[in-house]
Length: 222
Image (cartoon, rainbow, N blue to C red; front, side, top):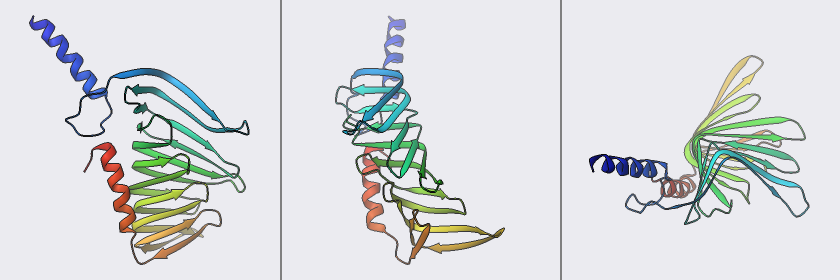
């Protein structure tokens, strides 16, 4: 009898640790509807062109339609740019790929196809609104371009327009003729199409609080 009790305890712990950490800790662990390992899926738009590709090590869909993805790699294809997004895990709350919540080691790479100018972004948590091609986070972020490295707390990045807003505590280090120049501000806006930065004195605290509330609700973090 003791061995059977240990067996059931091990199964319970495994299911509990494998389930996505959303909602309140008191909620019942949802049942798994289906799983796919080493999956690859493609969305084709009405013009029969590839809109996005998603692949990963494991996709787990629960009976409440919430979907957990391990090691997701998402490619977004637009006329003027491509965006690649990676993270350790991702949660799709609706299971319809309308928005996904990226967690741990989030990496975003945007490339402008007209001038081949990549922009790399690193953070720990982020929300990606797929239909809007918009990424937001309240966490620390690092943005690397061909001539600069910029850090800040919180950002909102529209991958379609190429407009990147760093919300607070921004520091930009620029390399010019083998010399470095530093610009600091409470908020910065970067237009990646013409490579221009605008520095603002006032931080975007309201937007950062709004993003933080959504991220904290999904990941159950402080």
